[in-house]
Length: 230
Image (cartoon, rainbow, N blue to C red; front, top):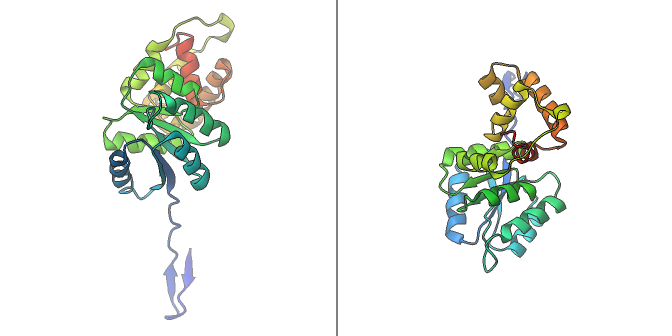
């Protein structure tokens, strides 16, 4: 579609709409870490840091003030216990339904990965993750998807075991989809991996979430590990 150029009487191509950036709040008790993250993330056109916090109280206030889509959250915050970030995660997810919390921390313990998902986090990556993987995780979380680095995904798989009643068993294809969900892949990426359409992937995701009695992708991964399906 074109528009009339008043000055020249001709036509001018309409500019494409600007990409709406993903709004991010950084929560880490080390200011130098926040500065480094901001510098790295704001190189991306679709990412914008709109707030920072170094403590639990600051995190609650920063998110309330800036209304981000994604919160990058360390589990260890200033002057608090080692896992005070878990309580921050619970509070943020309760106060701001739909917000995407991505844990970015130095701790790679299986228990903390699982507890973070239970607290509402959509993803978990350790701080030595490369920039490309971190950006991918942020974008995935902003879309409501889960995002785990390789170690965190493995931790989810190792964390719990159990069984599932026969009437609730997942099909082989649903298990294939579930394993790729645990790696943080999008529906499109899962379809490419399995040579099926994105619509078919959505169908399988809906079925496995119904069988696992969950409403979010990260919860599906957690529930599946609890039942020993991964």
